[in-house]
Length: 89
Image (cartoon, rainbow, N blue to C red; front, top):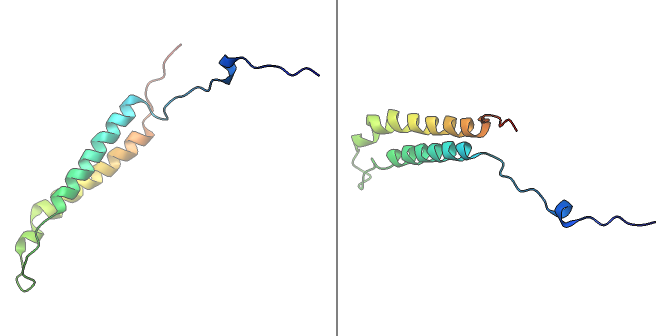
C-alpha cells in the first residue's frame, strides 16, 4: 500500500480572523464608551467620613455614566453580531 504524500500547499492552514475590520472598529468604540462611563462614575466621595458630600448624587453619576455604560455594552453586542456585506467572488 502506497501512502499519498501531501504537498506543502495542502499542509498550509488557512488563517483568518473571526471578525472583519468593521467589527473590530465597533468593538473599540464600545470599549471607549465603557471606559468613559466608568471614568465618569469615579469621585464624589469625602475625605472625612463624618462629612456627607452631595457631589455623589449629581447628574453625571446618576444619569450620564450609566447611560454611557449601557450604550457601550449594546455597542459590544452589535459588534459581535454584525455581519458585513458578503463579497461576491
